[in-house]
Image 1 (cartoon, rainbow, N blue to C red):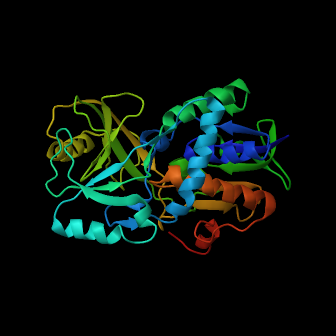
Image 2: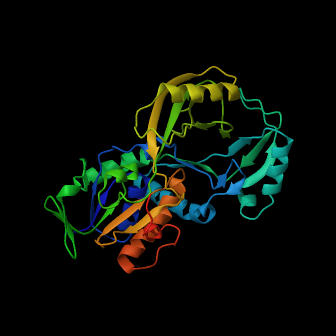
Image 3: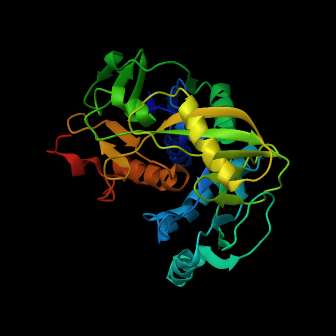
Length: 349
């Protein structure tokens, strides 16, 4: 008998099996790659909300633990996944300059928000300068997940197929699925949770995001944030992510001409340099109505757990959320109130 069945291998599923490995738990993973939000998100880690110059929810506290988990993965696979890259926030006027300076003096924010610089960057004009964020960067999540898939296949811990909820048998002290038995099962399916009959009552709204990959001879060594962001592709020099869109109505993973046009219109206002679009990708971010993750267990079936709702900062949040859920399921340690799915009991959506 396994200790756990894990359904889903995005950033949440990956983080949870890290907890299982560290605690010597035996597990098997189901994943069919139907949810692409982790792979297209770019893997950026930034604990500051750059629209308002405010700290993201608990991001400062969680970032160090997240980086530790990715460092462990680097040792495990002998590869580099963490790439520290400063973020340059293009400032639009004197008011934003003043707001940046005021915010950068505040506790926590001062760790990341540095001086305003007037640096020359290929094809980007910034008469009011850039506010510089340090301690930020990109995790090559796509490569990490690919390497994890290969490891799981090697040890016969991955089944690449659609999980059929109707075939899950639930007993008092274990679950069974097609002859596989485990003490517990955790669903980390991203937006796929909407099809899960055990947890589809949770207010997972989902936000479609689309990004472009461009190729250009412009040398942009930082992440540039303006009305869009430009981020280096850490896997290939000369390529950059451009994103991202937010669509609350379309729930497909299909790239759209409208999103490409929207992103290119904004990019052309930011980057005065020739470029070529080489790909466009789309995915549904697992966002929640109150913008907090979802962790907990089923109200009736206590051996069914859920881990979801990492939103736009999954790289930062998922490792701590996974540790919280594992300690809750194994040792009955209380979850953070903000992430416990019991906060939605008795509410309808």
